[in-house]
Amino acid sequence: MAGTISILATYRHAPERVWTALTDPRAIAEWLMPNDFTPRLGHRFQFRTKPAPGFDGVVHCEVVELDPPRRLAYAWRGGSIDTVVTWTLTPTAAGTQLRLEQSGFRGVRGTLLRKLVLGPGWRRMLEEKLPQVVARVGAGGFTPDPAMAAGACS
Image (cartoon, rainbow, N blue to C red; front, side, top):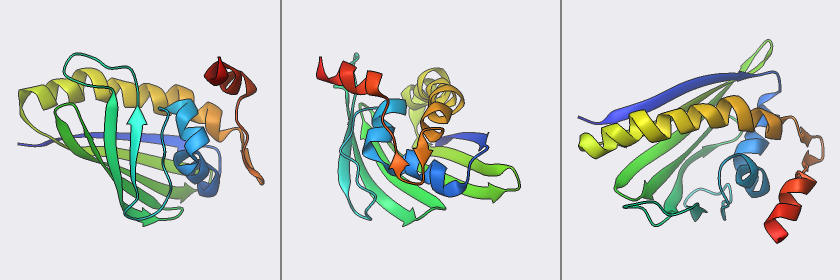
């Protein structure tokens, strides 16, 4: 049986601002991982992180659903997992409700990754890192953190 990570988060910003944080590759690099993402249906891209046992540090992805600024989904394949990550943005009176679902975890390894690694990791990203990035999205788009840019160059 396949398992799913499902997390809700609420942000005091319009869906368009949250959408920018989810789709601007510079923003994604700050709250998630370095990438070559483009918000285009069918676009193949990669996330890169430190390798770990059984994982070379590369997540191979493909945009499989795109409905700005409401819904984005991409295939997520890396290590021993083959899943789909879906982002759903719903406007609220206070801003935006964001739902993350990562579905398709299979077997014991998939269950362990979902419960012990990826689930807690996504929760930390949505509660701690993504809000900081969304706060730097304005009318002109995303403003990168100069400290992050300096760190990337050194």
